[in-house]
Image (cartoon, rainbow over all chains, first blue to last red):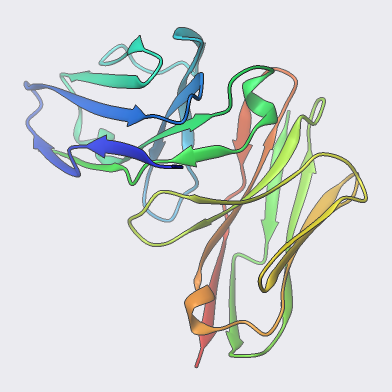
Length: 116
Length: 109
């Protein structure tokens, strides 16, 4: 099973709302990632969790708050977003052990976020 | 600064017309080079991992190769269903993954 699931598939939120994106994998992977992707652009790395600990934060604004409750789940809490934050948000995971950048990633289908 | 450059940006081929996509990279301590396929509105799908110069991997009509400065994704006798954006990414020694901008491939029937 090489599936990463993400919910919801689509999300529309106002600038004053609080919402959360969820990601789940059951491949035993111990590295999990959040990416942001704008149309016709490559994915931009936001956060990396390795063994449930935040290992990389790519200078992401504090209105994005990641959480890794256990080895299978990854959340992204959203608060006071701006219209320019509208994008496809992708979750990915990769193999346990070693360095996360040495292993291929398995991506979920993404959450299409629109901020109004 | 670590960088990944893919060329061409877009490529239109007739069905059956073989070609190659290029990924040039400069990276501090290559941990791995990865090829992904992405269909519109979907997450990238993993294709290949290459670790060292001279390495080659094949899957159906695709073959990926690696040198010290670049990687090629060769596509042989493509079909319309091979149409997608192909992304190249590298992992560096700081545990970061850097993606190229991708090549949009369109195969005409």
